[in-house]
Length: 265
Image (cartoon, rainbow, N blue to C red; front, side, top):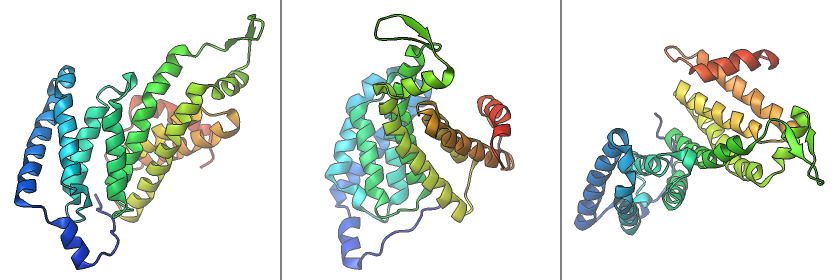
């Protein structure tokens, strides 16, 4: 994975931001050890997530206190730290996220992006962050949305067409909130795909995530703009199947089979 490019900095500035004191290096080592254990918990005992809240928040405070994210020479360590905390914050995204940790991760990605504007991992991390935040709203929409039956001002049920129902629903607060989070997800995934193409590091996983964000944005958008989002998702999926060794999930393959014929190549 490409590490992207970084802005030019004078040696004096870089040294000032890059050198941690011996005490801070020890603190950083402790943070890493704790996050290794947290990451292991997520994969083996995710039901214990609540017991690790103080560990995660302590790690965030320590990283901020030592100004570690200002160090332009330790990007891979920074990416790993943010990614572990982000995975923790979205351990069950359908039920929501741990908002303060998710927001810290978003701010942290943006901080390191300043020095590495074309880094694939950072751009994807931001895309994942916005996409995962949207999942809570999408889950509520999925539960609450009817089957095309709506009530008018008199309380009498009326049957609407799929397009009319979609346009009505798209103006609701949940749909608006979902779009607020999904549009940045689409934008950051698009930038990640472009960066991956330039460095010949395009993967099926990245394209599938980009397709998911576009599909979800289309699902909560008015019909006038939904089509462009669905078309973008299909184009991402078409490129995914061209990658040797990568197999689409059943859901994505069925989506491509069902809707791909409506999108020009």
